[in-house]
Amino acid sequence: SSGINAEYGVCYEMPNRPAPPPPKKAVAVLKVVRAIYPYSAARSDEISFAEGDQLYILSEPEVGWYMARVGHPERGQSGLVPANYVEENTEQLENPLHEAAKRGNVEFLKDCLANKMSPNGLDHAGCTPLHW
Image (cartoon, rainbow, N blue to C red):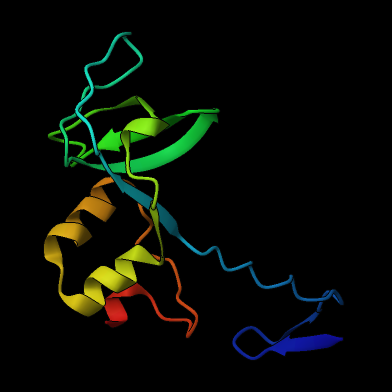
């Protein structure tokens, strides 16, 4: 198809191509566990934690171990933790920033942002956490 630029009176050809597909919605999932035993790191790639500490699971690089961050990153550290030292009933929150915002849980909201959860994630209704 062609068009006319009204400002300059120039004709040009419009490319005939399909629009790109919309981006896939990535659902943010945060796995949070609580330590049921204290642990002292035995190697430099491990981290120590106390009983009751909240840990954010970043990945599971090998069976029986999590790569985790203990608490707030500015006050905590990340490294390997033994999976059998944390509660078995781990909690996975879908869209954790949305949940924190809905409930007014500012401390958890700060922790999520500090742990690199995207503030641009959309929930099932297509809303960002700022909507709440």
